[in-house]
Amino acid sequence: MKQDDLLGDGNGFVQVVPKEVFPRMRDPFMLELQSLLGGLHRGRTMYFDASYREVRTLLDGSRVILRRLVQEDREKLSVGFTRLSLQSRYLRFLSPKQRLSERELRFLTDVDGIHHFGIVAVRCQLDGTEGEGLGVGRFVRSPDEPAVAEPAITVVDAVQGHGLGRLLCCRITAAAVERGISTFSCWFLQENRRIKRVLLLLFPRIQFELKGNLVNAQIDLSSFVEPDWVR
Ligand SMILES: CC(C)(COP(=O)(O)OP(=O)(O)OC[C@H]1O[C@@H](n2cnc3c(N)ncnc32)[C@H](O)[C@@H]1OP(=O)(O)O)[C@@H](O)C(=O)NCCC(=O)NCCS
Image 1 (cartoon, rainbow, N blue to C red):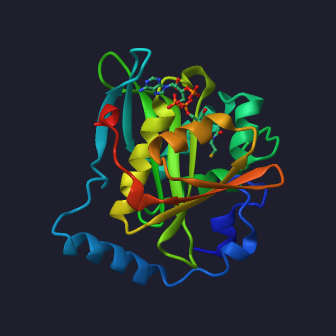
Image 2: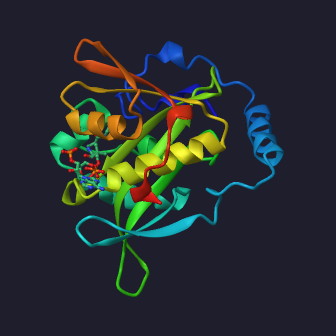
């Protein structure tokens, strides 16, 4: 993976992490091996593997399917983006964004399940099949610090406030821990009070640092206890 692929086009679609934070990819094979051996050492295979799938009911009674993000989700992501308000796009990408470029879409679906991992939420139709995309949670491992990753969560406006953001945050956290990640590091706009509340709910000891109009959160994943309501 090239550094540019990891960072996107610099328009902040991963978040505005300074480029020097992602200098050069360490040997991806060694990182993968390390992570896999970690899982085997603990005597279990991964829960969030390719077969992961769960159906959940949101607060409004609608049902969603959660599963791993795959490269074939490109179209779903592209359509999902058009269902985000300008404000949600701004909060997610930290810049006004009219559309996702081909390059961005390629990056956003270029998941290997270890260093770049994602879970998508899609509507569960009456017959149990997949409907439209409703949200996505992901993390990208820092090439320089393999135990650190940057998370990002997006939920389409129509279903915001129904518990999906919290659920996705719980699931990507559990998947990150499973892959040997101990810290989430992320940036969000100071005005983004909702993501702050979601993070505070899941990580009560979280520390925030204000830099200009951006907030940096360093999240110790060892403090994560899955709340009853997401089990
Ligand atoms: C931030 C974001 C991901 C949160 O997702 P969400 O689905 O709206 O969040 P949730 O529904 O899980 O939680 C938020 C609200 O739902 C309600 N809620 C969720 N779960 C609940 C539960 N089990 N019981 C009661 N209320 C609940 C709460 O009232 C909460 O309200 P609050 O905002 O006043 O605290 C979403 O708003 C979003 O995509 N925003 C734009 C992009 C963005 O900012 N991403 C974050 C930076 S990467």
